[in-house]
Length: 171
Image (cartoon, rainbow, N blue to C red; front, side, top):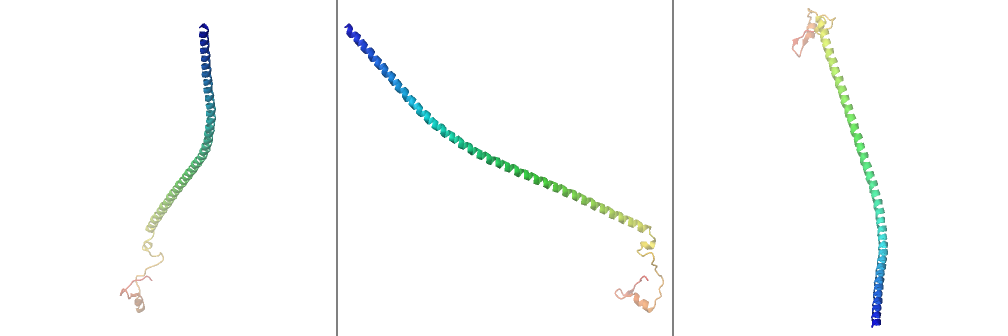
């Protein structure tokens, strides 16, 4: 019995070794499956990464186009604002120039009125200094005759038919 026990024991050890080898083989198979799956995953992830890289390139191109259009839009907006500012400055300059011209015209008009008043004042002063017959509006050389010989011809020339009276005229 000793030999049978030993054989049974060896047989159990061999079965355990076979089981262990089977487990090891199963582990290797599992590892191979995982390696294969990892390779597939890596390949798939590479494809995914490649796809993402392409998407990023396209989005970068789109962003570049948008950036350029935005830049051009901003540039256009800045240019239009600059033009508006130039127009506003020109309008202010024109307004200031018109105000200066109006002030100048007002000053000239005031100066002309002063000159006219001064001329009138000097004319009045001159007329007050002039002899009495000049003040009455007669020229200096004219003399008024007080006595006139009334001939029928003269009387007819002095008669004003509209007023129906005789008028006194200077000779």
